[in-house]
Image (cartoon, rainbow, N blue to C red; front, top):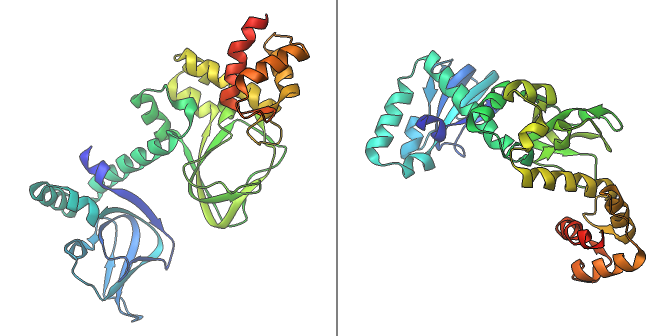
Length: 310
């Protein structure tokens, strides 16, 4: 849908500013809840916008407004910003504006679902496990995921607890480990393949956060098969994933590198027993900087070269 590519879904809590002098650059369409406009700092509302209403169209023409629009209770809207309009041919822009400003609540609800699906699919794309899914399968996933809203300090994952869900950070940040985790990052994606025991607790930091949760059960129901079967559609990606799991199991400190002893253990898991001399020869081949440690790409080379020692 063309309109879904132009629109962005947005949510506001009670009292939050939707549009003011610093935000007057978009057309807003109310899909649920209410927004109220007041002039300058007046406590009295001059307009109230409910489901199906719109405001802000004059700002698309860069006309200044002295009104501030705030949410009254929980509010959800669709936004068409000025940059999208500027990129369209004039005739297309007029058609889009006419269609949106005349849309009935039921039509806006359909647009909202389409926009939400498109945004969720973009979020799911950060998980490499889902690379081989078709567009239809991604649609099914996007329609069945669960959004988890966290207040600052609220815990998403408990340390030491086993789970089979992958989380995608949509808004805000999660913390608890060495580095904060921000938007467009997948957390515990291997949980789609096997249950994962979380090494550290993660909670919302620096304010509220929103995550999208995809469980293994939801995945299997949506695509009609388990994640391993889906991965095997691309044998190269599947084998790379297995190697990454092996690599990560020995990279205990999360540094992104492993040493000779850890490589020897990983090779043994692959059924390859190596002597100290063979390890030295292998590292001389793949350890370019001579640090005595290798990263994942070099580890893949190790596995490839190790066949010569069998």
